[in-house]
Length: 365
Image 1 (cartoon, rainbow, N blue to C red):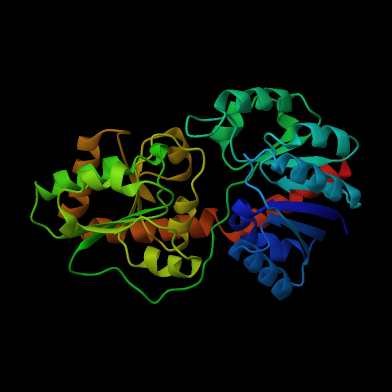
Image 2: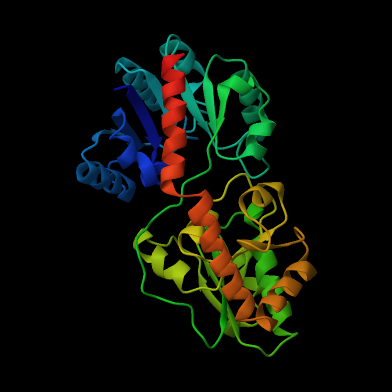
């Protein structure tokens, strides 16, 4: 049985959990989770490992990645990872900027596979120019790279034999007995509110929609926001059409949040990959999204969701109005076709088989 040394950053825990338990039956996996020992993430990972009999080590991260003190932490982490004997070393971990030096030093003779959540640094990221310089360097290293979309892989020009593309698995936060209301249409935004997520566009579009129709609807905006009162509250002209929770949403609430809406709205300006998209697929929630390449790769128009012109308030307003005018027929059609698409193309077993093939290929080269 091949041995995989698997490092997961706390922020990527939900990327790995849907299938790690089954992969651990096909490989000898030594799982290392890098997160604060005081965090919910650490407890969640520990409980998961215990339940599924996975050998896990928690590496206590005390500093944020942009804190200079985290450089020493990351170097020590890489020395620890490299000290364990394995056939393949997999890093589902943000290697920029700390591991630039320690990967070269510690992983020189290792078969190293890096999860690439971005093929190119985008405008919403910190230190964009420096990050792109790092990516240019990374292209020429003797490592393997796992991408989660073809669009991001295309941005990272390196040998095709060194790249693998496997879609993100559907996250499962548990079942819900909740259903969407029958007396109104619920549009849901979910996730961190930063400038590239363009939450203001959704709020403005909702207010404009209110002025165009008397049909009942509700726009729920849930997720962490650092400066809600200054950035977004001024756009809320009609408080009665909104349910606003500018705060982190506990994981245990996710099933009910996604099961009680009719549409997930993603008005992003840029996108590489989207966790909420996969959550929507897990709870059969049709998606309204900006017509960006990253979304067009993961959302099938008129099958799993609908598109509007990116950054165009009239286009979004018009599409939301269509959802009201054609309700419930449009919602029901999209919900059912999305469910069928997910069952055929994004099952956990399909994802697991691709991981198994990838690890065996790297280990045998």
